[in-house]
Amino acid sequence: MNLDGLGQVDLRLLVAFNALMEERSVTRAAERLDLSQPAMSRSLQRLRQLFGDELFIRQSHGLSPSPRAEQLHEMLRPLLDDMLRLVAPVTVDPSQLRRTFRIGILDLFSQMVVAPLIKTLQAAAPHVRLKVVNLEAYSMESLASGQLDFVLNLGDEAPANIHSRVLCYEEPVCLLRRDHPAAVMPLTVEQFVALPFVHFWIPGFNEHRQLDQLLFGKALTRDVWLETNNLMTAMNALCDADLAMIAGKRIYSVLPRADELVALPLPFAELEPVAIRLLWHRRNHANVEHQWMRDLVASLFGPLGDESAGQRSE
Image (cartoon, rainbow, N blue to C red; front, side, top):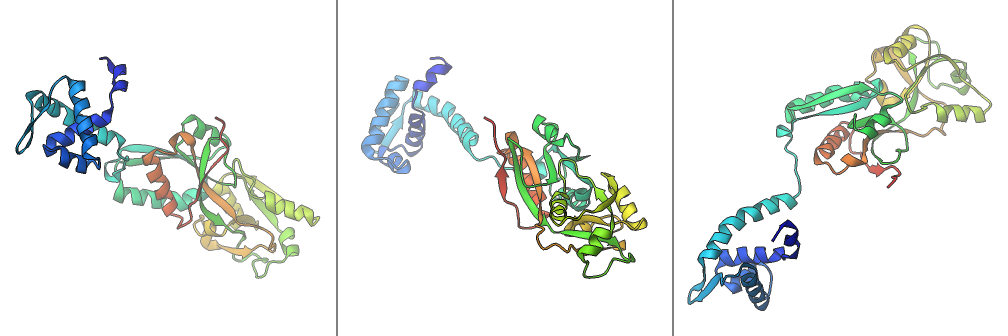
C-alpha cells in the first residue's frame, strides 16, 4: 500500500484497536468509545482483515493480544498521539513566543499605544519585538503584500480581504493653547469658523471630511493656514502660532505639549464620533499569534473590540 492507499483505511479502526489493546475487553472498549458491543465486535473483525492477523485471543480473563498486536500498538500509539496534537486547537504561550510584529501607525496613535504595549510585552512576552513604521498612503498595500502585520488608523470601512477591529470611538474636539483668546466655553459657530487652523493630515483618511461637509451645508468654511502630517510640526504650530486643530478627545490627552492646550467641544451636535481601527490581512485572521496580539492591542483601549471583515474578492 502506498500513501494514497491510506484513503481506503477507516482511521476509526485504529482508535478502536487502541481501545481494545488498553481495555483487553470488547465490552469495556465499546463503552469507552460509546459504541455498542456488536459494533465493536465488527470493528475487531475488520481489524483482523486489515492486518491479516487474529490480533486478540479470547480468554477467561479477557482478550490476550497476539505478538503482532503488541508490535502494532507500539508503533500506533505514538502516531495517534501525534494525530491528536495535529487536530488539537493551537494555543499561544506568550512567554515562549519569538517573533517580530510589524505595525503601521500614525504618530497620534503611537503616543497612546507603543509605550504601554512595550511595557506589557516586557512582562508577558519578553521575546516578542515590534517594528513600528509611520503610516503612509501605501500602508494598506504593505498590509496586503505581507510587509506589515497590522495597520492602526481611523475610518469606517476596510478594503477587500482586510479584517478590522474597532478599538474605540473618538469624539472630535477643538484644540487651542490655554491662553488663546477663544479658549473659553462655549465655543460658538462664529468663533469656530473665525479661527486659523492647522490641518493634521492622516494618510488614507480625511478626518475633516464630515466637519467640512457640515460647514459647506451651512455655507461656511474654515481657514486652514497649515497642512502637515508631522505631529511635532502640528503641535508646535498649535502651541506657538495661535492656531486651532481638530483632534480626538482621547488622543488629545497623550499629545506632546498637551498640558499647554485645552480641548473645547465643537459647536456642532451633528458630528459623530470616529472609529479607531486595527486592521490586518485575511491571511492572518485565523493565526493564533496574530489573534493574541490583536487582543493585546485592543486591551489597551478598553472593552470595545468588535471584529469585522472588509469585502473579499475570492
